[in-house]
Length: 204
Ligand SMILES: [Fe+2]
Image (cartoon, rainbow, N blue to C red; front, top):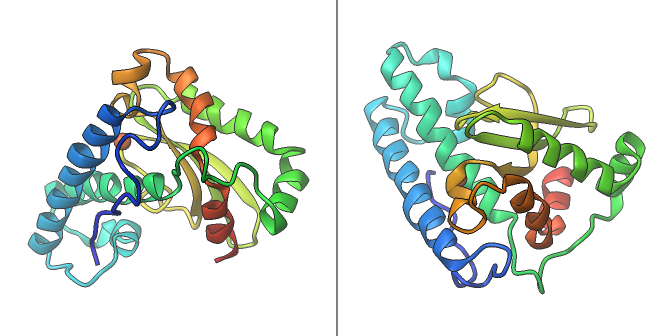
């Protein structure tokens, strides 16, 4: 079912990391528009009942090129923002560090959580133009990082990876508040990322 993730907090609850105007525009306008357009395209393609993940994994099954491109862009815009907003919590409520199996895997592969964060922020900073930085889980339980352009994600890129965390580096995610300082936005964002959500995705 296609359903925009509803924020369980007020639009100013992520301040000072992300201001109310950015949340209202990003979630209330951009994400809402992706959701509506994707819903319309899914109906046009006769894919009602399929999940966004299924559709994005099987884009090759859509013969019409314009429709296929639309589903890729709008479906990614819908799903990527669900993943992004679901992992954000007010600073006082967010779990600020991972524990358990996810922490153990991070330490094994990256040495420390800080080293992983540095890698993810580096990927986000290096993405030319709009896109996303991702922490994913591979089928064997190992972690993989990647960046994608536009609204692409691990599913539409043909990988077998499951997203654990994502960083939105589209200008609409930070420009009202941080202007051109993408790196500052990425650094601050970790104050409102709820690692409890990442743990659940990793263990799920
Ligand atoms: Fe965004």
